[in-house]
Length: 401
Image 1 (cartoon, rainbow, N blue to C red):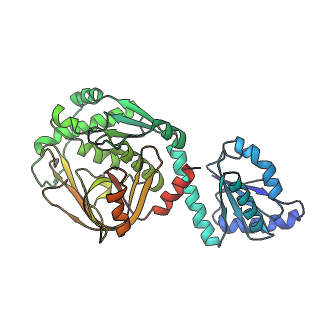
Image 2 (cartoon, rainbow, N blue to C red):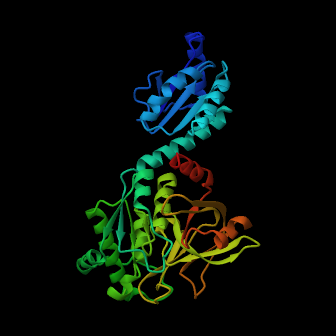
Image 3 (cartoon, rainbow, N blue to C red):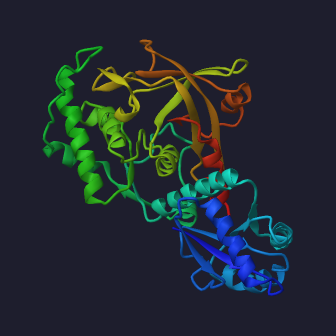
């Protein structure tokens, strides 16, 4: 629930200001969904989203007197809602300037009713995502793969900024669970590029075991050092990860924690975990890029075909066909200090033999494509259906406060 607090100069007639304020808030929240707290700031900071409605000019001194208490509650970013009536905007600008002089962050929410509705919806979505993430336990089933030399995480930053905790789970625990897990039947009439029926039982046991670990340790997300399974059980985690993500449990390959963080944030904001893939080819002049990986969430594709895992030629990999159309490419660093978000278009799917099994060609702006060649955040990136850059930018603006 969004809480709206008010500050008002005593020079203005309260009844008149209240009538104007009621009409204004009705235009910003046409469906309701907010709690008007008035001038009582005693529970400020306890809601998903707190807005300070500056109702009149002359309220700057009131805000200045309130500020020490609000800061003591842990508030680091102030959202000032203004109607433009009764010199509300002028007062809000003065307050924002004062905040910035103190090294604090804030924003004046001002504009048409349509703009304010959209802006508030974005802020509410970010606030809800941050609330959803807080307390999430992330399982690290095995260490990051040896080749992911730039893809580690800072547990302190994750705990402080997002309230996430990391839990190490040894591969031995997963292997013990796989040994006793039941096989699950292959869906009838499953399409296969290569005959993987002999590998299906083993792949489905990995899937069952991974979900068991998630329940046992009360995980909200997990990453798997999946290549170790090639030598220990002669199979792959591609099927398991595809199913976990489709079931709403963010799960990344190769022990890649920053990729998993990106998937967790994406799901909290958009409801979809995204497709973890690595760039295979880049045309920096045209901005066209090919991404590929051997697993993809089942709920992201319109159809899928089973194949082997590309590098090893064994186990069960997945070739999925993703819908063409708008996409967002997203990645955050393991210390949350950097992120990349670019919007583009998924042009087509393809199926070359000498690449990971799910392959998509994306069109990005050339500058965005060149990012991969000049300042990439690791190799894996997350592909999300739809355009979400503004939402991601707002999320990290809030996280940096």
